[in-house]
Length: 445
Image (cartoon, rainbow, N blue to C red; front, side, top):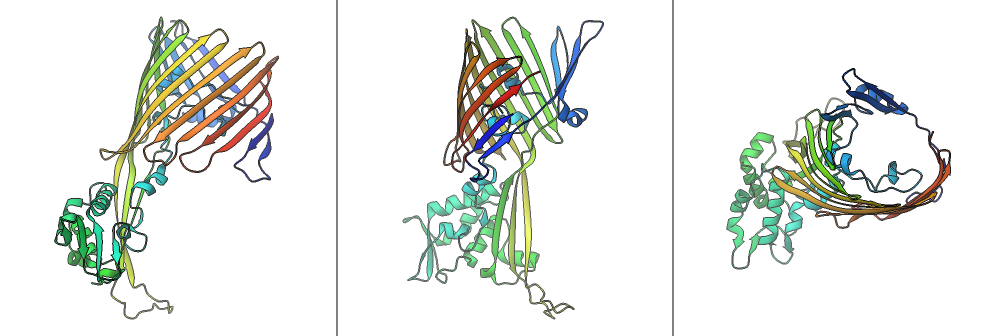
């Protein structure tokens, strides 16, 4: 129980009271042959525990231990987490010290924001769209001009966004009559300012393996090529992969873990090892995940159709004079992560550091690479424990780094009660940084 503060909220909501009570059930048993078994779940997660998405069960023996349910990936199970701070450490905005890992659903935080930055989302033709991004209009001459580099980059983006359904080389070949190799520019006579001309339309359709006349026949569009509008929208879908199993085994100073998760067609696996000597533990792990059809692109073409006759329906409403056709391409989204962690304990001091490298791929092409470094310190003096941590993640796509820095303290009052508080400054790949803080009393029974 205590109070919380969030600087990102409006002035009337920055401060709030917080209280929570949780009960955890722990079950244990042993077979006649000496195998230990059991499980644990929180009372508020009883429904999920019954369905296999919350809580966990285990069986262990000389062969090691097998756990199923809401269990960590291999690396986290051996290394643990950086030290957290605050009354609500490990919950909501106070869980940012924890490792983001692809093996339990991934953390592609950029999502559609990243796609908007790298792909021709939105209007492909028209004001502010794909063509207007690559063309420079000369209003004194009846022509459009564009640099060769801009056209090649734009066509390559469209090929990538359509997962190869669009062929950039074919489209470039269709534009070849308008290319000047000496100046590395494209020039085509059109009405100044007209961004949806038949030259571009024909080149784009050639990239899709068709012609303007065939496209009109297939769609029912009229021959007003300049009136066509194309849009493209791309998105990621990487939901949590819930059903998990984890095997771990320890012998002397060496520990090993192997994990696997699957929800529907989505799968993830992880492996890790750790070695401990003289208070120092070194952990390393690898994980990968695949989301079936986790990336999709939809291209929509809208154009005029023959004016209906009569032009209104029975209620007198005007019948449409335009139509749209859409084409959707999907591909698996894949992620790989490499984790390295070091933890050292000496007397009352515990220091930890970790590094993570995560790579996201679609259709064999790299989408993003993220690198995270984090560290924490925890020091105990009698009843007082002071904790601090820091994490920073860099993405190849993001304009700014993601970070979280926190400091806090806990004072043991005895009997299971303690005073706890912490302050965390955090920022995502987009948006401004903000502060959260809390203070109160925690009870353990």
